[in-house]
Amino acid sequence: MRRATAVIVGAGNRGKDAYGFYAAHNPDKLKIVAVAEPNKEKRLSIAKIHGIPEELCFASWEELAGKDKIADAAIISTPDHLHVKPAIAFMEKGYDLLLEKPMATNLEDARKIAVLAQKLNRKVMVAHVLRYTSFFSKLKELIQSEIIGKIMSIEHKENIGYYHMAHSYVRGNWRREDETAPIILTKSCHDMDILYWLVGKKSRAIASFGHLSHFRKENKPAGATERCTDGCAVERECPYSAIKIYLGKNTGWPVNVITQDLSYEGRLKALQEGPYGRCVYSCDNDVLDHQVVSIEFEDEITANFTLTAFTEEITRKINIFGTKGEIIGHFGKNEIEVAVFGKEKFKIRVFPPEEGGHNGGDFQMMDAFVRLLTEPDYKGTFTSPMDSLESHFMAFAAERSRLSGTVVKMEEFRKKFLN
Image (cartoon, rainbow, N blue to C red):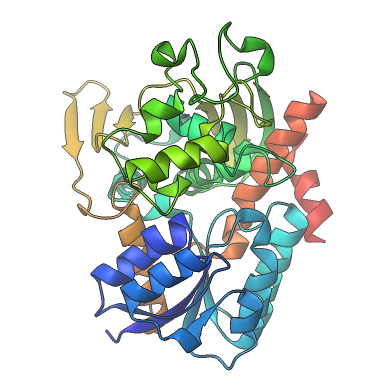
């Protein structure tokens, strides 16, 4: 297998610490040859790691896209609302793409990317990383083996984790719908996609309920200050304290997101001046902190999905119910229990790569992406943009249902955007 080459467009957490990290650890598989990143510190940091010359470091994606094609692929890891224009520009320039999820923050733009990829015959992999993990791959294998018969229903839960919620969806980049999109898309299009992939059928009807109930100004405790560093009277008892989350021994995620200077002094300054030091009850957030989605798929298969901020663990749990048995899975523990009716239960442990986020899934997805670029007959897991549209349809249908109090019929819903 030859080595693939790529440019990184957006050197934030995903661009630098997921895709760039993979390339740095697999130099025989992938070489990063250029970067476009407006933040100078981030740009210089990734350039140093990958040995990118100064003339191939750009402050904007437009500058890079304006040059002749210099790599096999472009990795689009800009903020969610900035995916569309660079994705289109680099496809038109001749690049294949790895496109961070969600594809876009609205269905019109997501469709635009999918249609153009087909028209130009570009290889575009959407970063629905769960499909590539050892855990969900094993679940798919078990379902296809029919060890539990025909699937009847699935219960799937995403435990965001209390401090992850505070970091990303209360204080952080995904806190406001008008700047990104509803949380069911930005956080859980992964889960809509994995349900669609496991079931192997399209959704027929969707209903949803959800609220922003806790992280609101009226729930601010007496004695709490605007920032956790302002002498807050309840900081020591508050589980969402920025001091507890960001000023401890950990300097990895999520701490490495708040500043490039990871010294204690640098982190403290970031909390005193930036968004991550704010009291979680004094932010401008408006995305939901809990939501449920009920889905009817084709062939009379049903699913319930729960998204919740209020968990200790950051993980996913799933129950799959079939006519001959059931499967219980815990993503964080890499454990699967299979109960075939009338037989003794047995457990399966999966062993993902030790490196890479999403339980090794980031590295497994990148392996698949490199093979897609370098092997003409690659037949492995591949989340194309047209396939990934389904997860976006499901997410936006869930939001429409939640806001309107109605059940969304998916055939009608899709027609509005696909015709």
